[in-house]
Each structure stands twice: as C-alpha cells, then as structure tokens.
Image 1 (cartoon, rainbow over the protein chains, first blue to last red):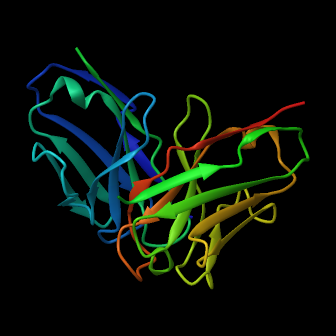
Image 2 (cartoon, chains in turn cyan, green; image 1 turned 90 degrees about the horizontal axis):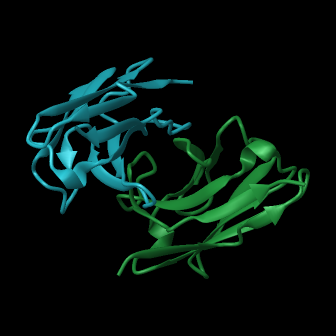
Length: 107
Length: 122
C-alpha cells in the first residue's frame, strides 16, 4: 500500500507568516491528493482537492501544489483561526490513506 | 442542506458487535460513493471503508478486513458499518463522509458527519 508522510509533524508560526506543509507519497498518485483542516473538537473540513483546486468557500490564502509524489499546502498569511491539524489524503485507489497530520499553532 | 448524521455508537465489550448508521439528506444519496473514517482519541484520521453509489463495490482497510462490513440502503438514504469481533484498538470516533462528485469513486470527501463514538472495553 502507498504510504503518505507529512512534514513537519507540528509547527509554530506567527500571524502573517507564510506556512508550508509537505506531503510525500511512497508511490506516484498523479494529482489524487486532498488536504483537510481539523480544528480542535471539530469535524474535518475539505480545503483542497485534485492537489491544487480550492474547495468552495475556503479562503484564498490557502493553496496547494504538486503532482506525482510530492505535494505542498501553503497558507500565504497565517491567521489566528488557522490553528488546526492539517491532513493530506490520497484517493487514487483504496486504501484512501491519510497522512499522520501536521499540528499548526500560533507563536 | 446536505447533511450526514451518524448513530449507533456506544460501549461494547471486546469481541462484541455494533452497527453504525449514517442518515443522509439534501443530496441524491445513490449517486455518491460513501466512506467511513475513524479517529482514535488524540490520534489522526484513519480511512476505514468505502462503498460505491450502487453498493456494488466495497473496499476495506487491512486493519478491519474480515471483521467490518460496509453497506447502504439507497431507498432509506442510509449508510451502515457492521462491526464484529471488536478490539480495544477499534475505539474511536467514527465519521461517515461523502464523495465530492456524483458517480465518481476516486474522490475527496466534501461532507462529513459529526461522528459517533465507539468504545471497546471490558
């Protein structure tokens, strides 16, 4: 099975910072990659699908890129409400594995 | 409004069984693949199982294969997860999730239910 590895596992950044989270697949998955945001005590929310397409209603400061095995989620200007854990997920085939998550905090 | 509401969670002894339900509303249920995703306390998301819109194709994580069965009743707009031979490591919040596009199995999950807690303990 394809493994999904996120880095870093956690990070702390200041409001207004540019933040980048990476996700690496152990084999190529084309662009079948989604990013989710899960705020503490809340349900996961879809941010990006097809590696780079922003889900409707998601702020434009979020962006995604990549194809094949290497992907990134970027927050262009970190806001206090972005405190959350972020997960990547591959969905090219079953199992639709998630990364282990990246916990984002405000410095 | 598109909505998913899970039910059926609770406390069960190791080796026991439980059936989860996910009631869907606000969309043409039979046109969308559905999945179950779980999250153990303090841990990350784990994909558990998926089913095509017609119910004709099903998929499972290795950790639950042979013990869990996913199914759906499109006449009742309801998704199910039958869980047998439960283990302590199955303790988690179980979410149902909807595929983003009609008639597409390989897709991200755009709608999630609020989750139902399953605790396996003696």
